Length: 219
Image (cartoon, rainbow, N blue to C red):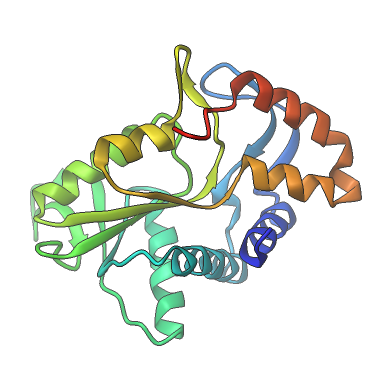
């Protein structure tokens, strides 16, 4: 497993953003693990997370000109990533959206750098149903931007619905025609648990969950 994946998963575990046990998801599924990017709630943890994102993105070779954070969790993630790239010597423009358009002041639903003519990288925590990401893609298109890709922290790599063996990330990638990059996925989490004595007890439930809900890796 590449270093940024290991660093990210350890950081998530230390921040209590990655938890193991029994968790009922919005879908009604009972999952042996839960990921909450909102627990990256300090400067140090956000900086570490942003470095993991940047390493994963750079390793992909994806070309982009602007970072976009969908409201709400995508906003601090894209902002932290912009700061990380500035630290590395690359000053990237940043934009994000409001949940509701503003009727006064500057108005509109977009804040930050203009999107027109730019290759946009969308930065978010996860893709669950894909609704928020699809809204972000529509917003970017309306602003004249071109989506270059989508970067998320964790890809659960599980089917979004019965009868469709694709994950939500695979479905969005196919619909939008752009790559979806993840700092780590369920396969990485299994490898991480295998090498961690404290997590060894959770590996069997993770394998059982993947056997029941895992997506077709070929998309």
